Each structure stands twice: as structure tokens, then as C-alpha cells.
Image (cartoon, rainbow, N blue to C red; front, side):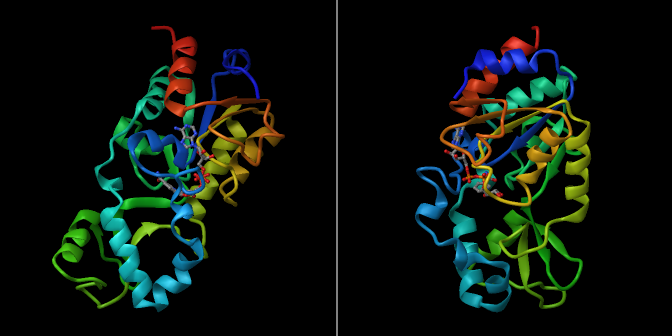
Length: 251
Ligand code: NAD
């Protein structure tokens, strides 16, 4: 474990920061993470929600829509940590954000969409898996609320799914490519609110480190990269990032 001062000393001279974010950056917005102490996986078995089960079993789809409907993600708003990254972007020292999150809160905070790479998709859109139709998620949730427990595509009858990457589903090639490019041109990578245990996403900060970037981790609890990072700051993302920005960005 290291101090905030150690992180500042490392980051102060660097001007091409890459943020790699996970579910922990959004818990202060009221969205539970997966593997933290109150994480979703303490209540639900992830093996029940694979892509394969979603496309083959109506009961899995029905449970997925119920959980989606009750999750509150669509109503969540950005917190101090998301705002701190916007301040770094506006100061011209943030290359971009590579996120594992599906909540869209980096863009809601004010980052332009070209600054955000979403490796696991975004919960705000639903796609048909068989044709090209897609809808804003609230439209489909309204159908579920109206009694369609397993809504299908009104155009072609196909299975529809929130535009996120499920377990067992291929990673989006274009986003992986963009993330790799950002990693190699960054001079520091800050991983925020992630156990760094979901691959291939977690290769992104490792690639940055291997190509010469300093590596800072901000997290509550241990991560799988603590032994690789230059500095590990234990603490709440909102508080730590606000302090980092106050010190790095002159007001
Ligand atoms: P994870 O659940 O594995 O790890 C989250 C980490 O953040 C934990 O170590 C936890 O203790 C820590 N944490 C929680 N609150 C924090 C805070 N306020 N400040 C600092 N740290 C905090 O999450 P992951 O590594 O992102 O992997 C989970 C996968 O789940 C990702 O692929 C992501 O797509 C998905 N997910 C996304 C959301 C979202 O979009 N908000 C929510 C849940 C899960």
C-alpha cells in the first residue's frame, strides 16, 4: 500500500494519462459492483447468465429483464470520481478512459464519446441479435413493465439483448484495438475501482505498463495487479480522485 503523495509524485510530470475504470468507480453513484463486499455476485451466480444460456433459455432472459428493470442503473448519475476524470480531460492531461463499465456514466459526466472506450458495451441500448434493429433500453423496459416478460424483436421476431458483453460472448474488436492504441501511447495508467480480474479487459493496463507507462491503482481492497503496479492507493474513488485532481490541475 502506498500514499496519495507517492501517486502524485509519479503522475505530476506525466501528461498522457489513461484511466482504466471498473465497477468500483460507480458504487458511489449507487450501482453495486460485482466482486466487492456488497457485489452482485454475492447474491447471484454468474454462471446463470452466460451468453449461451441467454440465447437458448427463456427463463434466463426473463430473469435478466427483471434484474435489468430493478437495477436502477439507467437512473444513476455520475459522482465525484467521474467528474474528476472530466477535470483531467479538460486540463488536457487525460488521453481517454477505457472502461469495463456498462453504465454510460463517463459520458453522462461530460466526457465526449470519442474519449471513452467501452469494452463491455453499454446498458442504454438494446439490439436485435438477428436483424439490425435497436432501441433505447427504457422503451424495452416499458414493454416488460407492460407484461412482456421475454420481449422479442417486433421487426423479425428475433431475440433481443441489452448491448453489453455477457460471459462467453466475443469482445468488440474495434474497442479492443482502440484500447490497445491508447495503452501504448499513454505515459501513465490509473486503474480505478476494479479487482482487475476480468480478462481480456485487464490486459489493457498491463499493456500500458509493459510499453513504459507508470501504473497507479486506486481501489478499495486488493486487486490482481497490486504486485505489478508502481503505486497502490487504497481508498474510495471519489475522495482519492478529487484529491489527485486538486493537486494535479491548477485552479
Ligand atoms: P469488480 O466488482 O470485480 O471490482 C470492483 C472493485 O472496486 C472491488 O475491489 C471493490 O472493493 C472496489 N470498490 C467498490 N467501491 C469502490 C469505491 N467507491 N472506490 C474504490 N474502489 C471501490 O469490478 P470490475 O473489476 O469492474 O469487474 C466486474 C465486471 O462487471 C466488469 O466487467 C463490468 O463490466 C461489470 N460491471 C459493471 C458495472 C457498471 O457498469 N457500473 C457494475 C457491476 C459490474
